Length: 216
Image (cartoon, rainbow, N blue to C red; front, side):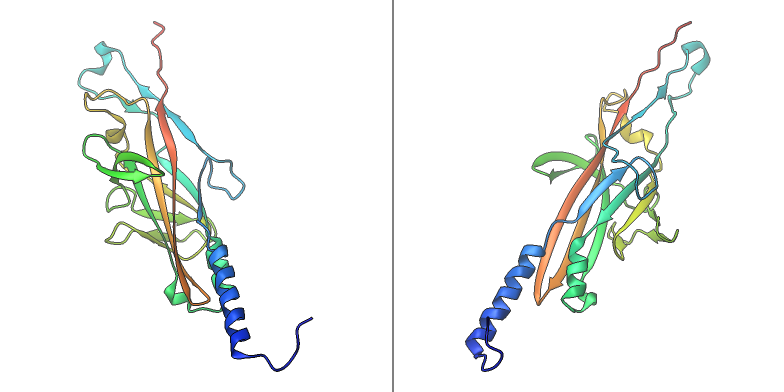
C-alpha cells in the first residue's frame, strides 16, 4: 500500500501525468447513428427507399416525377467525452459539440474525404435546406448558425427535414441516381484534465429509388 504522507513533488508529477494519460485514453470519437424513427429505442436506418412515381406520358404532360417519400430524418448523438469532462471538473465553456449535414452531389458538390473515401458533397445544414433540429428530450429546436453548424448542448436524438430533396436525387442527365447519401459530421472538442481533445465522426444514410411498374 502507498504511504499516506511525505509525498514528493516527483510523485505528484507522476500522479498528474498518469491522470492526464488516462484522460487521453477516455477521449473517444462521438457516436452518431441515423434512426428509422424519432424514438430513443429506434433501430438504425442504413438506407431508405423512395418512390419516384412515374406517371403515364399521356397523363404526366410537363409534370415532373413525384417523390412519394418522407424527407424527415432522425439521428442519435452520443458523446461520452462530455461525461468525462464533467468528471474532470473542467470549464464547460471550453467544450463544444457540433453537427453539420451534407448530401452527395456530383453536379455541384465539393470534394471531401469522408471515412477515407473521396466524395463530392454539398452542405445542407444551411438556411432554407435542413436548417432546424428538433430535440427528442424536450421538443425544443436548434437553428443552424452562419457557419452551417448546429451547436448541440449534449447527447440527444434529433430530427430534421430536408427541403427540395428530390433535386439532389437526380444525376447529371436528370435520371434518378442509384444511390444518394446524406452525411452527418459530428465534432467534439473537450478539455479533460487540462488536455484538449478534438474528435470527429461521420455517419450516413443511403437513399435508393424503388421503381414502380405500370401494369396497365
